Image 1 (cartoon, rainbow, N blue to C red):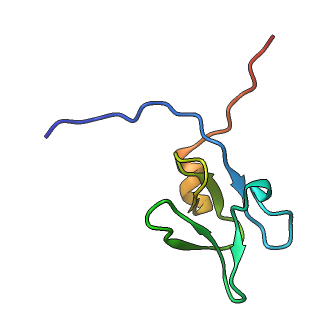
Image 2: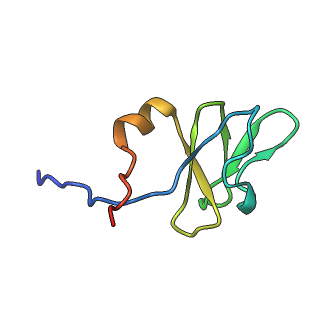
Amino acid sequence: MAKYKSKPVIIEAEQFFQDKPLPFSDKGACCFDGIDWYVETMHDGQKCVIKSGDWIVPEPDGTHFYPIKDEVFRNKYEQKIKDRK
């Protein structure tokens, strides 16, 4: 079987905490249905429940989002160091 390596990609992400300002609030990312917080993905508007500490990442279409559990996010991504001038 052939092996493949992911291309390096820079993503935007914000961490969700129920008692703090909502991630991507200017884009209406996080919704509340009276019971659960959730984000809508680009897969037929599927609703994914989010919990405090989850990371919210925009989908490639820029209007939908998906959640990543904190442990998974920290194992996969590292913070980009700002470019030096």
